[in-house]
Every structure is written in structure tokens, then in C-alpha cells.
Length: 531
View 1: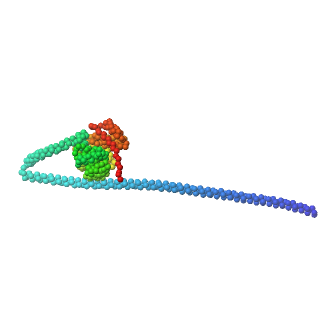
View 2 (view 1 turned 45 degrees about the vertical axis):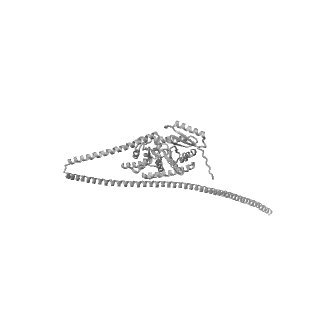
View 3 (view 1 turned 180 degrees about the vertical axis):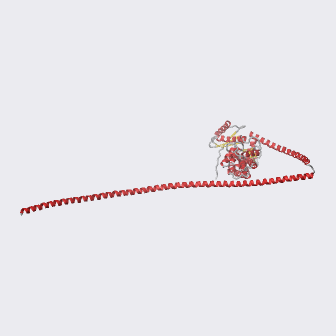
């Protein structure tokens, strides 16, 4: 019994040990599992937090990139929008400019169409009138033939003569009448021939004088001013000639005071200068106050008055010749022609006469009379400035009118009325014929006068090439050059040297008749005011 108890107790103890070991093993397994589960949870939580942090940072970075992209996109949009608006505005302006040009072209076409319609209507009216006139002429011719036949029959009845007898009687009477009229016509023709011969002789004489460059040049380049007394002549000259020097310097003319009583001669190849000088001298003589300051004042006032009168003369000439639409520069140049003579003929009156002759011939040839008048009036416009611009007056006039968009027919008529360029329209030979009719003189119209003008211009240009020269005027028909130097730059000895150098240059470079006198003026003027 005792061993059984011990055995049972031992079994129980071993069982308890085994159970405790099993329980401990189970507890260890459970604890290990719990610890591993807890560590796994902690690791997952750490991983979750790290992933949340990475996701947050990625989200912020994405938002930042998105915001930057939005800003860049907005900036690019604004830039593209501005560029688009600029291009749109430019395109709009180009469209407006194209529309304006199209409108202008459309207006021009409409005006041309209206003009063509008007001309077409005028042509139709002219044709209709011509047909009516032809019908009337045919009817009148028929009536005249019938009337003549009736009168012939009646005359034969009244006279009681045959046709042959009437013819013989009529021929005898006609012979007597024709002989009488022929005698009168011969006498008239002989008288007209004598008049024409005298006129041609005067023209030939004037041409010869022009080529000789003597009296004719003086006649066309000098003016005389009446002096009331010798005392006034002395006041014109001034103390030691200061007044006359101041007058010549202000006007650019040559004043000749000689022993001729009551007369002072003003000489210049520029007609406007001469006219200004003549009027200024008359005003100074009437006023009585003659000194350098007063001379300059009167000359300036007179120059303004003459310029105004020149414009008025141009307007009157255009109105008289019935040439509308001339530029102000054209009118001014036409007015200048009033003071210009060519072979003893006033150039402005010559131009008006040529315009009228051109219209008459153009009407006979069924050309445009208005265009012919315009060509004739402007054909010598270059003579107004041929002493200022180098070249022949046809070329000068053509260049001037080309600047104001004159028609090609007008330009060719001006440039070719002396045969310098080929004629491209019928108006060019018309102007040449009218010019010859108006001039009515033989010989060349250009060479001698233009050589003379060119020589005067060359004299002045040569003097201006020397240092210290302020002004230079060719006077006495080119027989004298008057040079004014700056007193601050040239002394007395230098003035003598410049005068000698100018004379030597003239001898070596120019061709001229006779001799040329070089007069050099050096004046020091001091002006103060007492207040």
C-alpha cells in the first residue's frame, strides 16, 4: 500500500512537473508570440508614420510644383496674350492702312470714271452737233446751188445775152477788179515787208550787241535814279564813300555816280537785286536820312515789298493766261520774269504771248488748249533762276516743274522747246513754234546769253573759294567783281593779296572779253547805343 502511494505520489509529481513544463512551454510560446506581435505592431506603426511623413512631404512638394507650374503657366499665358494682342493690333493697323489705300484708289478711280464719262458726253454732244452742222451745210449748199441757178437764168433773161457773152463780160470785169486788188495787195505786202525787214534788222542788231557784250547788256542790267540836287548826290555817297559802300553791300549791286547831273546809275545782272536797289535808292532820296543803318533797314523793307509784288505779278500772269492750279513757287518764279529781259523782250510778257499762241495752234489742231497754255506759260520759267542754278534754262525749268509733279507733256515742252531733248508729245513743237513766233529774231537764243550768265556765276563762285570772303558780286556785265571780306579774319595786307590771287585765278581759269576788275572791300564798323 505504501509503495503504491509512493508510486502514485511519484507519478503525480512527475505529471505535475510535466504539466508545469508544458504550461511553461506554452506560456513561453504565447509570450514569444505576444512579444513578436507587439514588435510587429510597433514596426508597422513606425513604417506607417514614416510612410505618412513621406506621403506628406511628397504631397507638399507636389503642391509646390503645382503652384510653380500654375505661376509659370499664368506668366506664359500673359506673355502669349500680350504678343497676340500686339500682333492683332499690328494686323488691324495694316488692314486699316490697306483699307485707306483702297478707299483712296477707289476715289481716284471714281474721279477718273467721272472725267471719262464727262469727256464721253462732251464727245457725243460734239459729234451730234457736227452731224447737225453737216446736215445744215448740205441743205444750205443745195439751196445755194438752186438759188445760183435761178439767178443765172434770171440774169440771162434780163441781160438778153448768151452764156458765152455773159462769161466774156464777167471775165473782163473780174480781170479789172483783180488787177486793182492785186495792185493794192502788192502795195500792202511791200509795206509789211518793209516793216518786217526793219524789225528783223533791229533784232539782228540786238543779237550782235548781245554777243559783243557791250551796250545791250548795259541796257538790260542798269537802272537810273533821278537825284534832285548835287547836295543829295553827296549825301548818297556819304563821308569817304561809306553810304555808297553800305548800299552796295546790302543790295549786291554797283552804284555809279559820275558827272552826269541829276542821275545815279544802279547796275546788276540780277533783275530782282537791281529793282530792290532802285526802289530803295528812291526811298532814301525821298526820306533824306541816308546812313548805313537806315540803308540796311530800307533795303530790307523794299525787298519784302518787291517779293510781295513778284507774287502778285505771277498771279496776274497766270490769270491772264488762264492757267489755274499753279504752285506758289511757280507764281513767284513767273513774277520774277517780269524783271527779266531776253534780247530786249520782257520774258513774262513773252511767256504769256507764247501761251496764247500755243492755245490758238492747239485749237486748230484739235489738241488740248488748256494743256498747251500751261506748256507755253511755263516754258521759260527756268530763266527766273538761271543766274542762281547752273545749266541751261530749259533743263532748269524742267527740273523745277518736275518737283511739283507737272505732267510729262509739260516737262518735255519746257526741256525741249529749243531742241535740247527729243519731243515726246505734239505740245513740244507747238511751244517751239510759238516761242519763235513771239521772239521773231534770227540766230541762237541760248548760247550767248547763257554763256554770259554762266561767266558771271563763275566769277562769284571763284571769289567765294578764298578764305575770309563773305560776299562776292559780279557787276558791270562781268567786267568787275566786287568782293567783301570779313575784317576780323583778313587784314589790309591780306586783302591786297586776296585781290591779286583772285585776279590771277580769273586769268588762269576763265575766258572773257577785255579785262575784269577785282575790287576788294574790307570795312570795320563799330556800333554803340547811347541810352
